[in-house]
Amino acid sequence: MSDQPETVTLTVAQAIVRYLAAQYIEIDGEKTRLCGGGFGIFGHGNVTCLGEALYDHRDVLPLYRGQNEQGMGFAAAAYAKYHLRQRFMFCTASAGPGTANLMTAAALAHANRLPVLLLCGDTFLTRLPDPVLQQLEHFGNPALGLNDGFKAVSRYWDRITHPAQVVQTLPAAVATMLDPADCGPAFLALPQDVQGWTWDYPVAFFADKVHRIRRQAPDAEEVAEAAALLSGAARPAIIAGGGVQYSRAVAELTAFAESRGIPVIETIAGRANLVNDHPLNLGPVGVTGSDCANWLAERADVILSVGSRLQDFTTGSWTAFAHDARFISLNAARHDAGKHMSLPVVGDAKLGLTALDAAIGEYRAPEGWRKAAQAERARWDDYVADNVRPGNRPNSYAQAIGVVNGLCDPADRIVAAAGGLPAEVTANWRTLKTGTVDVEFGFSCMGYEIAGGWGARIAQSEGEPEQDTIVFCGDGSYLLMNSDIYSSVLTGKKLIVLVLDNGGFAVINKLQNNTGQDSFNNLIADTPTAINPFAVDFESHARAMGADAETVANPAELAEAFKRAKAADKTSVIVMQVDPYEGWTTGGHAWWEVGTPHVSDHDSVTEAHKESESARVRQRKGI
View 1 (spheres, rainbow, N blue to C red):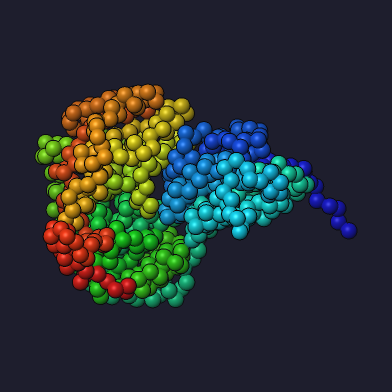
View 2 (view 1 turned 120 degrees about the horizontal axis):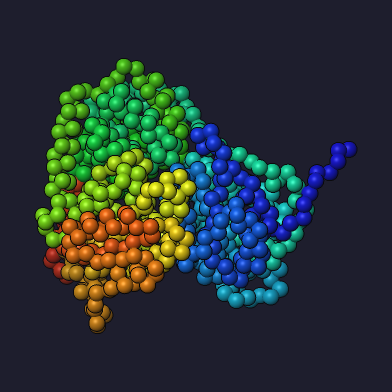
C-alpha cells in the first residue's frame, strides 16, 4: 500500500487564497501570476475568515479597497479586458447588500465574456443562528438566498458547503474563466461558518500550476466550406470583433485582409483592431458606425465575421446587411458561430484565419470593390475631420474627442461606456495603436467609466506605467458612480477623467425626441419633479476626493488643460459643458429597433412610429 499523501490543515478561506496564489499563466513564453490580486470591502461574511487569509498573502495578492462593490466589479472587468482575458482579479463582498451590489458588475462581465472571480459571503450553513442580519428568508425554501440570484449572471456558480469541495470547485472555476468559449464570471458563495471550517488538504493541491489559454483548431471541413464560399465572393467584407484581440490575432487578421485585399469593418468591442490609417480599415459598422462601413455592409455579398457575437448595434438590428448576404462566423464559441444561419467555423481566431488563408488558394477581392470602399472611407475621414473641429458648432462630445485624440500618446488607453459617449468615441476616435480602446457596450453600463478606468490603470501600470488611462464620462454616469476617483488617488493609479456635462441624460432625451416625444425626465431642465435645478460643481467635487480638477469653457481651453493633466503625477478631472441638442454626430447611423408605441394620442409619436417601421423591410428575418 502506498503512503498517504502529505496534507496541511487549513480553513476553507485559507485554502482558497493559497490556491489562487499558486496559479500562474504563460503569456508569450513568460510566466506570470494568473490572479493579479483583488478588490474588497470587508463586512460580516468575509472579514473574519477570508480577510484573515488575504492578510497573510497581501504581498502576492494585493487587495485594493473599493468604495462601492459595483465599482470593484467594474474595475476587475476592465483589468481582465486589458489583459485580454489572460489574467483576472477577484472581488470579495460581505453577506447581504455588499454582495448584492456586485450583481450589476457580474452581469457586465457576463455580457462581455470577461473573467472575474466573485468570493461572496453567505448565510450560515448550519442555520443555527437564523435569521441572521441581512438574510433574505424564503419561507418555503430555506436554502434559497440572495446569492442564488447570481446564477443568471455567472458562467460558473457554486456554494461551498464542505471544505473538501474546494479541491474540485476552484480548478473548475479557473478553467471556466480561462476558456475562450465559456469565459465569464465565476461566483463562489462562502457561508460564514464554512469559511472557517478546516480540512486536511493535499499539499499537492497548492503546488504552482502554470496555465495556458486553449487554442481550438477549427474543423477542416468547416474551413473548406468557408473557403469555398469566400473564394467566390465578388464583394467580400471582414467584421473584426473583440475576439480578434482576445485571441491575439490582430497580426493574422491584418495579414489575411492585406493578402486578400478584403476591406475590414470593426464592431464596438473590436474597435482598435486596425490603426486608423490602414488602407483596408473602413471603420466601425452599425448603429454607431461610419458611413463608409455601413456602405460596405449594405453591398457585401459574403461577410467573414471574426470574434463577434453580432450584437444589434453591429447589425443595425439586422438591417445593415443585404438580405441575400452570406455570413461566415469564425468564433471560439459555438453559440456565436451559428447565429443568423451563419456558416460556422468553430475555433480560435488566430488558428482559424491561418487555416482559412491556407485553404482559400489564390483568391483576392476585386480591385474595383476595394477602391470603391477606400473612396467611401476618404469621404468619411473628411466628415470626421470637420465633425471634431472646434468652432464648427456649440461644444460637443466630438470636439472633446478630437482634442484628446490629437494630444494623447498612441499607447494611452481610452475608456468609455453608456450614454452618448460610446457612439461618439466609436465614430470619431482615430486609432493610433491597436488594442487601446475600451468602449464598454456589451452591457452599456453607466458607472463603468471611472471604475473601469481605475481597473485598467492598475493593469496598465503592470506593463506600460508611463502611459495614461483616459476616461470619457458624461455627467449622468459621473453622478451615478464617481468614488473611484478617490480610489485612483488613494492607490496612486493616475487617471485623466473628462467629464462632459450636457445637463442630464441627453442621449436618451435625443432618442425620446427622435421617436416623436417631448423631452421628459431626462435632462435636468425637463424633469418636472426637479423643483430647484442647478448645475453640479464637478470640479469642486473631484477636488474633494483628492484629484486635480479644473473647468474649461471650450475645446481650446480643454487642450491646455489636457496638457497639464498629462504632465501631472496624479488623477486629473477636466470638466466641460457640451450642448445636449446640437452636438451630436449625425453621420454613420444604421436603423435600430427600440420598440415604439403602435398607437398614441400624440400625432408626432404616431408619425415617428410609422417612419421607424418603414425601415423594417430591410430587416433580415433571422437568416
